[in-house]
Length: 468
Image (cartoon, rainbow, N blue to C red; front, side):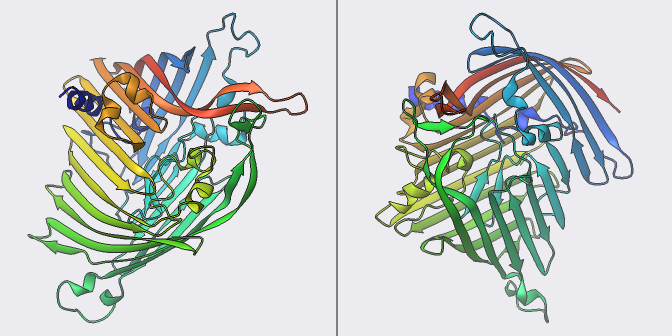
């Protein structure tokens, strides 16, 4: 009973996506006039702690919506509360601005439309990107390493006859890129008996152009990092990513329920492969509310890992398990295996949203994702999310200490309380990734030795808002 209570508490404290609370947004209950600009300006003064180091954070941000476009500029500045432990570091947190890509955080989101519409594009943070049915890319997060910002690109086209998806992890220094083409060939000619006209074929081709084989090992720590605190890779080469899928969406009950059986076959470097067979049931309750349920069976050959580009991929690709990169770990998987995925997602705006995903396979263990939001509880708004990979079971959440002991766990819980119109109090607790335990390397190098880990951070702030 204690384990289930702990799991319920975790579920209530967390929601999706992991970075959802970081970006301001036009209130969900407020309609956006496509004929005019709608804007909201925000300013925040907060006391935060990153890896037990205190900072004062000043953030100016905005949301500007115009004819389907959304622009979210943001200027976050963190000032160190200097004490005797860090006299040499100065007042400004250098890790936030020590790379060219870090300046992209000044515009973390530019988007048009929504995924599933005729055309959608998002540039900046990609907290939850999936390509196809997830056999290759499953809920990828391009800013999982919080000290190395990336400007990702995701785009989708959804025409009745054809469509596609594009994913790039970083527009300025791309390492991972995929392109998916979708065709509905039976919709081009004369009308066919229901539901054959909706047959859909998809092909995905991409690569990790610098997939690491071996990461450099320090003398006293598991990893070596350069002067910009990026992990040094000793050996890498491109890793081809390929998938093909077939699906047959069927609309029933006056198009309120869509059933989509599908099969997707994926391959890593055209050598190993996996097969995913599943069905998705999506019930449209009204224009804003829906219920979505998914079940999937997975088979993978030796050397293959389902959903290879996962939420933690930017960390896993250099530090996956037992001192290996994810590529070298996959290559040494000596046996085929089976697995499953179960997923449920319900959205009833503006009251509540809940998503749960459980995936298990013999290659990557058991992964759990829980998303919760309650954006309209009077003056209180709750959001949060948790992603835990390779867990042993519910006992991993018996206590806060046990959950924090999970090496591959990211979580955030946030509450906002509206004091008066335009003034809010905000509090957040985050368990997020960074390269930690850094020590200078030998004198012949300008780099560091360290290791990846997720630390517990917190934020308490006052937010002022102005709607235009």
